[in-house]
Structures are given as structure tokens and as C-alpha cells.
Image 1 (cartoon, helix red, strand yellow):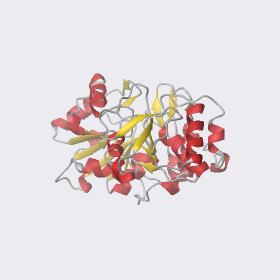
Image 2 (cartoon, one colour):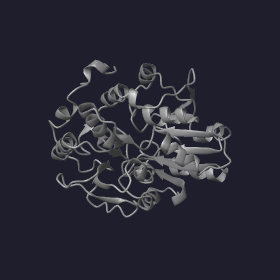
Image 3 (cartoon, helix red, strand yellow):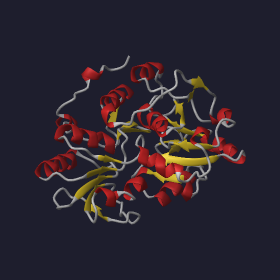
Image 4 (tube, helix red, strand yellow):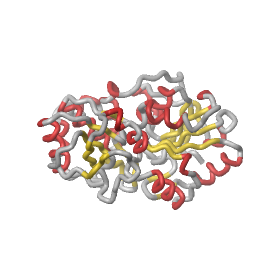
Length: 321
């Protein structure tokens, strides 16, 4: 049974979230994540949807309909550091059939080079030019948000930002910066979020969110991601964060640029989340495939969520394989 939206607090979000330690082991249920996504629809794109979805056995069944597949990562290719069974073999066969594959991911914790190396460890053979991450989508637009700014990053401790052509440094909670960029929630704790709230109350500045996801499927459950904290800040402080990544058009624009000559009618966005992959794909003008078995909806009956949100994918499958 879905959690009613009224049961999810709509005010004082930061105070609620700061009441317990936060990390990748601090997870949300599918119902709670879905309810939060629904409460945030006013910040998301608007899209049209088909009247109903068509079931399919996987992407190979759809190969005749599409020339290119945009692939979410978490919940479609992998769960945390584990590849989903059969996914690599499925993509290899699509390549043999001449299909174009683009990973379109909101994972902003690591560089594209590191992402490609990680995919290869998991058994996937993506080239660098086949990966579009929200990290790069945001990095390419920082000058548009605030020219020549000094950015304070909420990021993994090992991140050195060498791939970002801007003045970015780890924010220690005190250093004065011109804006903030949220790249990772790997090490976010209550003190970090409280310091960020205090800094923004004292001096409003741009907040760039390089991962709009609320949650990501990991071995431990659905971890809270940068979008989760950014939306809480927006609710409490009445600010307008700059979101880069799915479901927003900027991420799809960068993916489409890698697929010249392929009409949108011959592309499909493949993902596990209604409010990012499916909503974003339809808003961008492509068909969509919802993968139900390993990501946000693993172990859940998906129909009630589709009915409540009215976000309807073109196709539904348990796994891409």
C-alpha cells in the first residue's frame, strides 16, 4: 500500500532529516521515496504519456523499434558495485545488431574516466564517449550559473575536481565561497547539512545540484542522494537550486548531441525510476522503458505507483536482459 502524500512532512524538512545520522547506510523505503518524488513534481518537467505500457522481456525484444538506447546505470546496469545478471551480455548483443548505447547517469561522485573504468570492472565495454554523467552536465554549465565563481563542493573526500574547469574546493563548513555544488552524499552528515543551511540563510548563493536523484539502489537499500538534501534546502529556505541531470532537459541535450542523425522516435530511455528516467525521457521526446526488477521498485507491485503518479512508461520489463 502506498504511503499517503500527507504523511510525508512538507515543512521543516531539514530539521527532520538532521534528527539521525546520514550515510549510504541510511536508506528510504520505496514508498517514502516515491511519496517525496510526488511532492516535488512542481520542480520537475511536464510530459505527455501513453495510455498504457506494453510488457516486454527485455531490450532485445525492442531492438527492431529503436536505433539507440539511453541507459540509466543504478538499477539497470548495476546495484551498487554489482552488475545485474545478463545486462552485459544483452548490451553486447545490441552492439552486434548495430545499436548505439549511451549511459545517461546521475552518478556525479566520480569522473567520466573513473566511471568507464568502473563499468569495465563490472563487465561492460563502454567507451568514454558513450557516457554522459550529470557531473559533466553541471560542470559544463557552471559559468552560466555564476561566472568566475569560487565553488564549495559537497563531495567524496577523495574527489580532486581535476575534470572540472572551475575553481572548486571541498567546503569545510566555514570557507567563504560564491556558490555550492552538490556532487555526492557519500559523506554527508547532520553537521554538513546544518552548516550549509546556516551559510545560505546568512548569505544566499547559487546551489548547483549535480545529482538530482533522491535515492539510488545499493546493496543496503535506497541511499539518500544529493537531490534529497537539495530539495529539503529548497523547501526550508525558499531557494531555487540549479538541477543538472535527469529528469531535466540539460542531461538529455548532452546525450542527444552524441547521437547525430538518429531521430528521437528511434531512441528509448531505459531506467528504473518513474520521476527521473521515465518522466525525463518523455519530456525530452523519446520513448521509455521501465526496468522493475532491480532498482527503485525491486520487490514491489509497480501498478499502484504508476496509477498514482500517472507517469506511464511506453514499455515495462523485469530486467534489460
